[in-house]
Figure 1: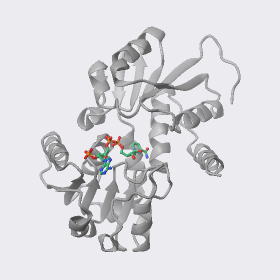
Figure 2 (figure 1 turned 90 degrees about the horizontal axis):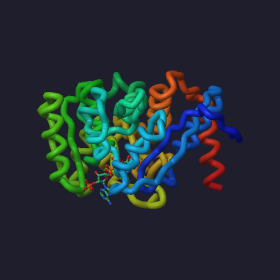
Figure 3 (figure 1 turned 45 degrees about the horizontal axis):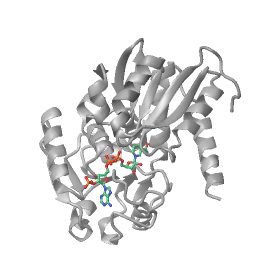
Figure 4 (figure 1 turned 180 degrees about the vertical axis):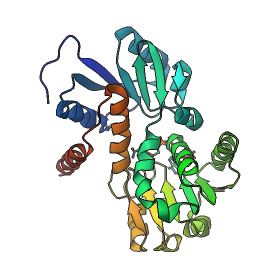
Length: 293
Ligand code: NDP
């Protein structure tokens, strides 16, 4: 890690609340170092009541940009000057570029989701898909599925069904898609919906560290060997939900590739350079292995 900074070192911030478990500072600072770029990436724990002040701070202090995480991805939009197409449809921003005083908002989660699913395009395109969750990342998942994979139908399962309804109505309008079905998350009632889907995506926090014993469902019949099951969670690398799906023969994908791909896209937006993804991914896995000892 570098030990000195110059007068023109560019600063990128990460804002969220809480923030201390993020891997993004590791990824971005390592990438800046690898590419010999005079940038530094620092996390800032910003509670919601300080969000506006934090955005003003970006302008006043001349930060080059920000990553935005929970719980600010949606609320920050009103402070920005312009949104990319995907950020505008998704309704959430995770990356901001300060373009000479003009704040541009992007959603690079959608790139991470696309990168993860693209190798399976043939298998999933035009098929039935189920998304569990109705928060910010579920919106990025649904945008990506509708934009790139032409689903036959999209089921949205969520603890609060009314949020799933709102999400479905919103996307039906914005992306002119009318094959949504919504369900309340109640595993015994969700078996058929899950089993009939070629792609299942978990976009909830269920099973995320430290609650690693929690799972969406442990009902074996929810899965089969024709399926691809993607869990956005990257810590742990394989959730209990994925373990159950894998036991039934499904192909399972964790959230680490998405994490690196969304970071790579943000890196590119700030620096114009391409992140050396393979080196970053290898060293992140090594870092996580050492952390878990
Ligand atoms: P949000 O807070 O926006 O949404 C959380 C979702 O989880 C909601 O649907 C919520 O349901 C549901 N939920 C939360 N707790 C429970 C519970 N106890 N029981 C049932 N449902 C629950 O979060 P995000 O969409 O931003 O993030 C979701 C996940 O995606 C996180 O685990 C995050 O780590 C991961 N993620 C991974 C990324 C990657 O790069 N791999 C990038 C971004 C996110 P309700 O609507 O009822 O509250």
